[in-house]
Length: 146
Image 1 (cartoon, rainbow, N blue to C red):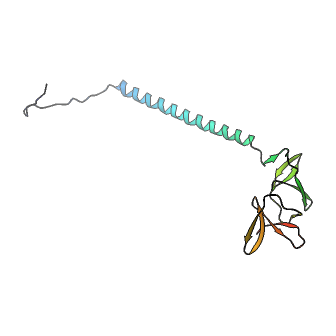
Image 2: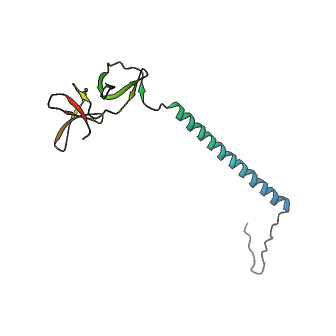
Image 3: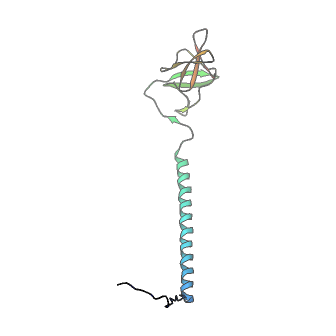
């Protein structure tokens, strides 16, 4: 069924007015939602803070190993004992091996297994795990920083 309006008929719209209690009710809803939003944001911040504190307390400051199946090669340089396990340098502290950078100038009789040849600026080196070794005239190897 179609509704046809004559041009002579006028349409009127009534303004809908709400009573005051309705507008007060909307304001209460907004305040409640804002309180919930503030609570959610505060809880998220608290959880993130606690999580980061726990993460920091469980990570040790320096990578360590308690033992190794392989026997470490001991190198003494400037009165500090270093140990090389699979080309990685460690120092022993409280019965643990703590990861240390290879000290420049340290002398080795033999290179760790797995070194590869590298040439920089026309100078030949042996390289393993970012550590460069240069063969000296006496046949020993020295840790260098090219």
